[in-house]
Every structure is written in structure tokens, then in C-alpha cells.
Length: 533
Image (tube, rainbow, N blue to C red; front, side):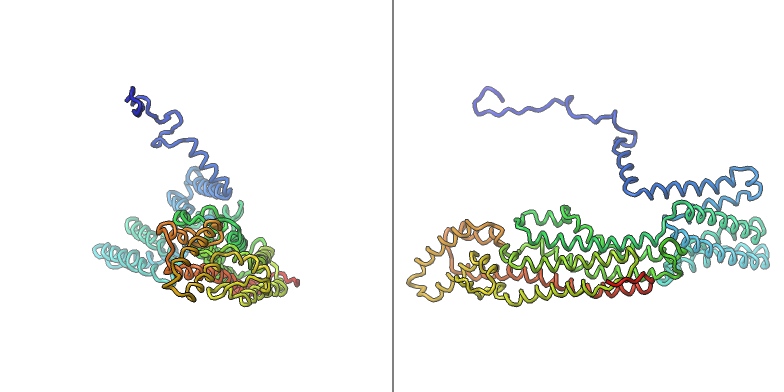
């Protein structure tokens, strides 16, 4: 529409100018960019080089057992049964040495039991005659390979050996059916067993001798990283709580849905809470590994790592609770937070130093007494508790700060003397002590104007719900005495938010005693090198 003064020109591009996909940079897989896929694969490999090494190790193991078929001389010796070696390598080869040995043990025991049962049932079936033999074999497959094995592998105490029962199912069926057709179940069983033994030996040989990946080393490193992550998360949480910055509550729901992506330490703490299954899996795999590297003791106490991890998660719960207070809707006034800043920061630094020191001792496998560190942590926490107790009147609504400088804590009186809540308390007392019928209108006008101007001038960082407090004045056009109890309730809740934060911090310090005891028990059982501080 052109030619008119108030007209609006709408430019619609023609269909032939629409954006077309760039087929020249696409591969044949549904237009997926080839460069993006290659870059993603490169980043995945660069993130953990051990993944690439593991892949090449599996390829090498499969190649070695395949040569027994590809080479004519080896094939004439082993025959087609060597295919079981390839299957064994594919099933048995795992990422770590411990998991490979665990799979190999389950594979060996399952194959041996299946062979023994197949030989016994096969011989018994042959004695019954040609008519009853297939019936007995079919019934044994239903009961032994199907119903009984599938039921027993679901038993809670036998869950770690679930792979062995799976091996019994298919190995028993192969052996007894092949023996029935070939007429010699013993020979069939022996052929399967030595083929499986060859595959298991090749898998263990390659995994142990070529860039071995020990589950014990990974468990050790994972636990130490959890200590450092917990200390980082604690310090970051307290730092953000004491910072002079506004909380954009309008984006609170988005932060919750995104799990606070701008806080890396929060993600680390969350990973620590979710590490239970990983630690238990690594500990189970580590029990199958022989003495290696720094872990040269037989029957190394890997289960103690799981216990220490459980106590560490017990402490991490408090840090997550501190993050909850940090991102809550109700926040303590900033001037009240910084009034206790030195005590809160000191307790946090001492606690984080203790956690990092415990992780460092585990990493270097040394045992040191933490008496001095514990004393400093407890002293800083007691100092914080005394300050909170001495100035608890600042966290209630029934105390009006004096105007003079006789307050026992000058810093607190200086910082808190300008809060609009104290002004509101004084005005409410005046309202209650005067004749409401005669002077309510005049007092309401004065109170509305002065309080409104103060709220407008105050920075948003000094209050928990500034928008909610100013809103009645702007929408209603006047001041109502009934709003005073609501304001006092908001003030009380906001001030108590600081009490909640400090209580969680003190509870975290108390739980550190259990963490020190768990680490000390691990150092005793693992025979760490003893060092006195």
C-alpha cells in the first residue's frame, strides 16, 4: 500500500528468494552437516583421549582372534569353533581392567556351569532312548536355560553376577542342541570352552599390557575431584550471597529450569550428589584388579572410598541448601548481610581449606592430623555463632535501632541505621499511640509521602521484595494503616533468611567432623603414609 501518508508498506519476498539449504555442505545423512559431525567427534575425542585408546584396543583384540580364522594353519587346528573367541572378546572387553576381569570371571563360570549341566543332561537324555531324548532336552532348556536362570539372576544378592547367568542361558542351549545333533556333547563342550578361553586370554592380555585403564585410579581421582568441587561450590555460593548485586527475581523460574547455567560450581556440586552409582561401580570393578601402581596392597579397601563419598554427599546436601537460600525469592537486606560478612567469610574459607586439605591427603595417599585446621574451623564458626547471638535483635521486628552511637557494634549500627523498615516501625508506634479518629488523616498523609519518597530513593538491593512494597502506594493512590502488619511480616521473613543461611553454614561445618573421621579411617585401612602437621 503506497501513495498514502498513513499507509504501511509490507514487503513480502517472492518464493524463489526463500532461503534454501546449502546442499553443497551437507552429507547424505538427512542433510546433517559433515563438518559439524567431524568437529563434534573431534571435540569428543579431545575431551577424553582414553576413549580413542579403548577403541583401538578393542579393534586390536578382535583382530588377533580373527587371525586364527584368517590364517590357514590356525584354522585347520581350531576350526569354526574359534568364532566363540571373537564373541568372547566382544562381550568381555570393557573400558577398565577391573570390569574386564569381572566380565571374564562371569563368562568363565557361566560357561563352565553351562557345559557341566549340558553334558550331564545330554548323557541322561541319551540313556532314555531316541524318542524321549528330544523331550528331555527341550524340557531342560525350558527349565534350566530359561526359567531357573532367569529367576535366579533377579535375586538381589546375585545381581552382580547377572552376566554369568546370561552366559549360562545361551551357552547351555548351544552346547546341548549341538551335542544332540552331533552325538557328542562332551566334545562339543570342550571345543566351546577352549575357544572361550582363548578369547578371554587375548582380551585380558591386550587390556592389561597396552595402556591399561585401572578402575582404582579412576575411583581415586573421582573422589578427590568431588572434594575440590564441594569446596569450590561452597566458596562460590557464599561469595555470591555477600556480593552487592541485584537479584533479578523475574528470571528466577528460568534459572531454575536451566539449573543455574552461569554457576559452574553448582553443576560440580550437583555432580557430586549424583556420583553414588559411579563410585560404587568403580569400587566393584577395582576389587577385581591386581595390585598396580600406587595401590600395591592386596585386598585394598576400595569399599572405604564409597563410604567417604557417602559422607561427602552428606556435606554436599548443605551446600545445595545454601544455593537454595541464595536463589530464594525472599532475600535478607544487603546491609544486614554485609554486617556479618567477615565472620561468614572466615568460616567459609576455613571450611573450604579443610575440605581441600582432606582431598589433597587422599590424592597423595598420606595421613596427617587435622587438629590445627579443625580448631581454626571451629573457632571461626563459634565466632560467627556468638555474633549472631549477640546481635539477634537485628533479626527481629521488635527492635528499633537507636539514633546515637551507643550500639555495641558500630559497624552494624552505621549500616542498618538507614533502613526504611526501622522508619516504618517508628511510624507505626506513633500511629498506635495517637487518637486514630482525630489525627489519622493528617498522619497518614505525612507517613505516606515520607515513606514513599524513601522507598523510591532506596536501592533495590537493600530490600527483599521492593516491588511488592512500593506497589500498594502506586496502585492504591494512598496509604492504608492495614498494610503495616504485612510490611513487618515481610521484614521479619527477610531478616530470618540470613539466619537460615548462617545456620546451614554452621551445620556444614559440624558435618565436616564426620568427613574427617571417614577420611582418617580410609587412611588407616589403606595404610597411607603417616605425616604429622
